[in-house]
Amino acid sequence: MKKSWKINKYLLIIFLLICQISWSQSVFGKWKTVDDRNGITKAIVEVYEENGLLQAKVLKVVEEGKENALCIKCKGELKNKPINGMKIMDDFKKNSKGEYKGSRLFDPEQAMTFRGKVWLDPDDVNKLKVRGYLAFLYRTQTWHRVTEE
Image 1 (cartoon, rainbow, N blue to C red):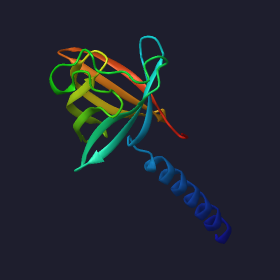
Image 2: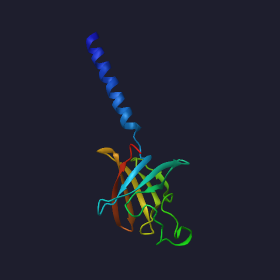
Image 3: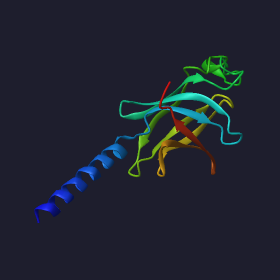
Image 4: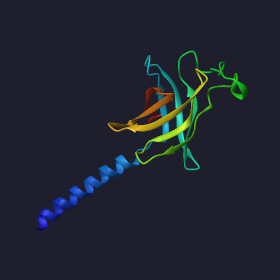
């Protein structure tokens, strides 16, 4: 009986450590954005929490030749503003499925705003699924967690 308890105790500790590691992963952090059409890495985006809601901004455009890109297609106050530092997600709320949904997912390259949904890939917590909706149509990109700078 004692030996069985020791083995079960060790299995329990291992299980709890694995759970802690998987639970500690979240959508928040730095992500490499990858264009779903051509596979080009576009930018490093920081996804962060503010007032209990998900926000995101472009930290750095990394696509070759576009490092200092301006939002030339934008209108109003964003017209000709640097994409570096631009906020691209506002006030996404977490739902019961662990997804974040919001009405402002901004694509500065197209100067278009979409409804959006963000969630961790259930098979790989180092991949973030980012989906933009326009009416009943949608596109999904997979972003990759930045582990080093």
